[in-house]
Image (tube, rainbow, N blue to C red; front, side, top):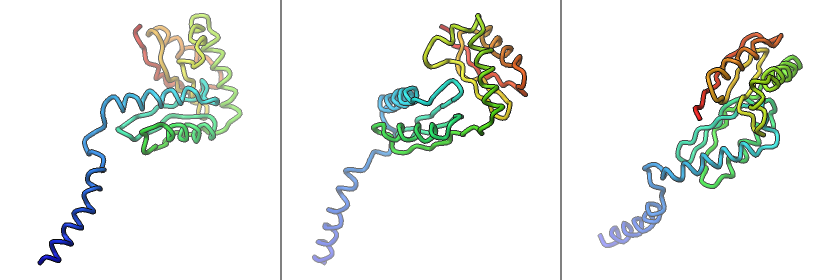
Length: 180
């Protein structure tokens, strides 16, 4: 009897530190999640190969980050994952970023679309920032516009300019209007 009591106390003593150091099961503090979101955004924007033809989005759920979107270079997909993994507090990174197929026709379309949108007088103010707010995604001749614009007219204008480029099969306009 006494032997069972001693062994029970011993087992309880070993189990106690595990319980004390276990992470609480309820969610993380909102401030911590907001900090992770800010840092993920910052790290993505600081990547050297991230350009107007790439679209990277992310979702932060607790200490886990899911990366989504499209990139033109395979190295960028890996770079994003690596910088996000190093952010303090991030435990898991689910990288669902699609690497767009390499195509000479798509590369030529990207250049034409860039000039058609950012070179147009009414839209050239969007060309000013280092990180362009209108993302141009080209996959097998199909174009998707992602990002933000100031008003509905600019959204429609970007769509018209993209549709006017020869060689484009279709245009999907996912631009969002952000009211100042």
